[in-house]
Amino acid sequence: MIINFKKVFLQADAILWLLSLLVFTSLFQTNNIMLAQERVISALIKSDTTEIYSAENDTLGIRADKIKLSDERDAKSGNLAMLFSAILPGAGQVYAHRYYTIPIIYGFGAYFASVAIKSNNQYESYRTKYSESVRLDTLNSKGDANYQRFRDWYRNQRDEFIVYMVLTYFLNIIDAYVGATLYNFDVSDQLGGSAAIRFKVPLH
Image (tube, one colour):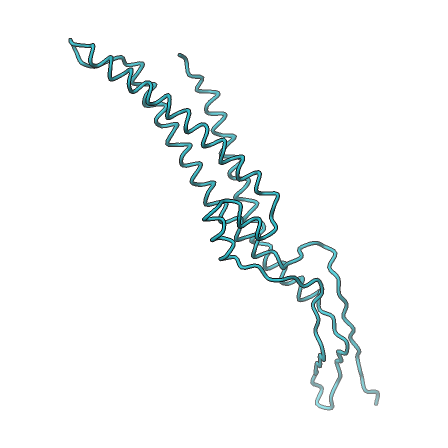
């Protein structure tokens, strides 16, 4: 059996790139929280009567009788979303209406789990073969070096993909938190609302 190391390295690079993309997406959306807050304050404030007037002492006064935010929705708890996804991956995404990330999470998880299981089966197979070769080598008791090399390689690959599974699990929790936190924020460029400002400048 010949292992194509070049193919394996390319596969590992692709997996790391996809994981990095998922992390970048979550962090990018987290950074949009402050931007969304600024837009809500600046664009979603509707004032029925707002006046700016000049007093005799040249000071400015502002009176806002009513502030109304449009497109209000029930708030989502980030901590509750994290709890849901920790118990059942994807449940926090359902809670936060972040449905499109669920196939990504389960797709990565299923792939990593399948590779880890196959690698573990190969590891156990070559471990048994190597142990048997050691038993049969009555002269040196070293066993077959190829069996030993394959045993170690599949063990390392199994451990590597288990780490990928753990990372996917924690990214699932982070993604649920981000989705719940951003649920009430509209980060689109077209935000509704209006503001009416009247200036009163005394004429002398």
